[in-house]
Amino acid sequence: MAGTTRIDRILEDSFVHEEVFALRPDYRAMLVVIEGIAPAAGDAESEALLVRAEEHARRVAAAGPIEDESHIASWREAYRAFGAKPQRTRNSLEALTRRAADALPRVNRLTDVYNAVSVLHGLPLGGEDLDRYVGAPRLVRATGTEPFDTVAGGDPVVEHPDPGEVVWCDAEGVTCRRWNWRQGRRTRLTDGTRTALFILDALAPTTDAELEAAANALVGHLGAGATVARRLLAGPDSALG
Image 1 (cartoon, rainbow, N blue to C red):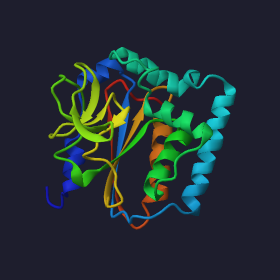
Image 2 (cartoon, helix red, strand yellow):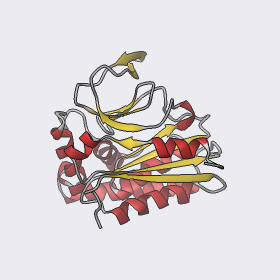
Image 3 (spheres, rainbow, N blue to C red):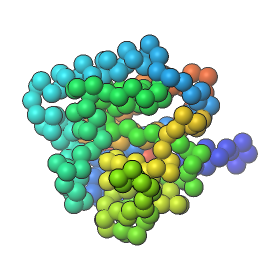
């Protein structure tokens, strides 16, 4: 197609395998690509967003056990469905909300914004350097042979997911294990990232409108002066309000 860009092709080729939708028919993924990011330290806007996220997390913690909050509980159920133990490997929303109840880290504007949006909108949100991808992202159930480039004890190592584990990957290997538990080293965001891929994961009770609002918030804070593209990946039975 005339005018099709590399990012268009990557988004067009991205997919969620039917085995994942069989596991959770309510699952949806919003992929957002922001191209032309200017690296920057945290500023007043990102700091205010982090403070709002911390205040929100404290309200969640005050309302009862964090693991019982409806969005977090839904992800715990999804983890159990493919054999993970959610008390040992927490989904990224739960891990970040627990951390935010004390204080979120201050890293840089890019990371600070997407961490805050994740907590405020109650959904797992991962950020990746798209220029480090080989091919398009896809969410599959692992065979157990795929390489995962990570760090253990301070040293780079290659691990492998458990068979049946839900993983994001590209043509080179796993980019994020256990749906949204741990991102890999190869495609992580850095201070040199210029094109970022954000993956917003949604399960019920998150509605389609709420997922769209989270994507809009992310773009609103990070997309000024940049080129933005997005795609919703959803199964035939996954639409929610």
